[in-house]
Image (cartoon, rainbow, N blue to C red; front, side, top):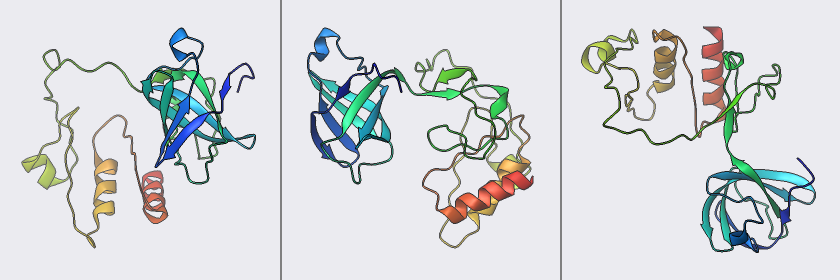
Length: 203
């Protein structure tokens, strides 16, 4: 991290995963704090977590801390990075495994030099949007016949405890007739994560 970044240490409150910090002279443009931009939280000289600006109210900036605030004290410091969250966008990401921050966790080559794009773009105008019409074949008859999946659309899969829904979801990902399949999991326990990673890597 560049040493020229200003550090702000006047943390006003820590509630849940939200942190409020006082930033003096914010209205005068002395801090690169813009809605949606990233911030870096440090504690005891070590990087604690990345965060995102979700609210600016005069000289108070509210941050959502990505890794939670357990163990974080009001003695921590905040640096504003002056840019929104970006992710790597190049052919080199195919076949790779990433954590929630977009960092490779599979032991493969680093991707720092690859092109980056902002993950948040402008809203789509529903009037100008091309209607979805191209079918994505999953080779699961109950889906392809009765609840056809088309490009740019979502399909809900409901299940109850005890049913083998993980195997079914993996089957859809493996069998789908698509050029690229991106699998993203949120809130997975390790057993589920390990199952999906093994199943997809094997195929």
